Length: 76
Image 1 (cartoon, helix red, strand yellow):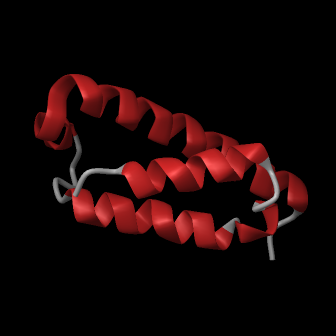
Image 2 (image 1 turned 120 degrees about the vertical axis):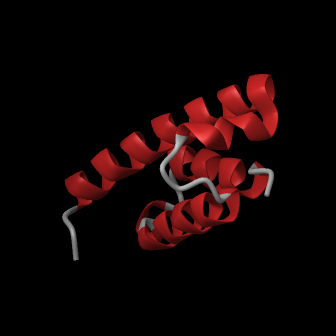
C-alpha cells in the first residue's frame, strides 16, 4: 500500500545494502555474517526475498531485477 515513490526509495536502499553485502562476501566469505546481529545467512536471504516480493510492482525495473538476482546469488 506504499506509494510508488516510497517503493522506489525502499528498492534503492535494499539494492545498495545487498550490493555491499555481495561485495563484502566476495572478500570475507562466511566471516561476513559475524558483522550482523543476525548471524544466520538464510534469514538474510529470506528477508531480501520478502523485500523483492513486497516490491514486485517494480519488477519491470532494472534495479528490481538486479536486487532479485543478488538475492538468488546469496550463499546460504
